[in-house]
Image (cartoon, rainbow, N blue to C red; front, side, top):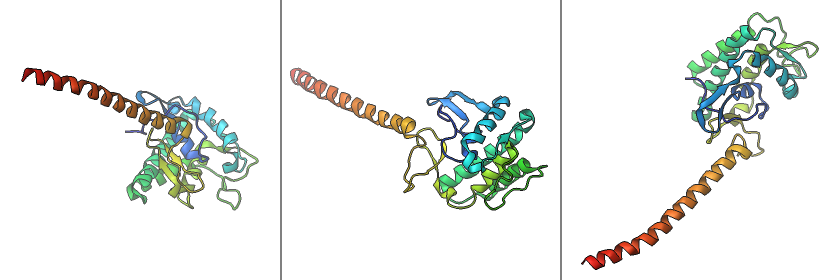
Length: 220
């Protein structure tokens, strides 16, 4: 099944690494057939990890990320991404956390941490020692697990335009679109088009109806 179609836009919009990773699955506009997954090329995982170390410096406590063997870690990264999206997408739609999806999610995150000798979860340093780089799959697992705590889970939303899972960071938790400049404007433009179309059709009917009534009168 995979993830739903995404709009074509950059990642690193919502301040959460696992949401960023979900958003690398993109489409061109609303055409899912023209979509692509950046991580289909494992080399993109290494490039993404390097960029994430900069854009997610606050979340990571300044720790750099590395993906030394992207070909090897690709199945783990994709498994964490898919399991995270399934679990929290269902939560955003239905409320609560599904036990079966939770089990898959925890297994995927465990695989991301398997074999790691890192010391993680310390107070003020959840991602460990910032003096050395952290494996990307381990950072992704830790960040995904952090979604289970605090108020983040209650702020996860699904964009009604593109289906993108995003975090609502607005002050009163009222954000509707993943990106107002893209999806919000598209919805507004769509409503405007439908209103104008309906008005044109109504105007056309107003012009045609009198003519039809006159024709009927002449036939009687």
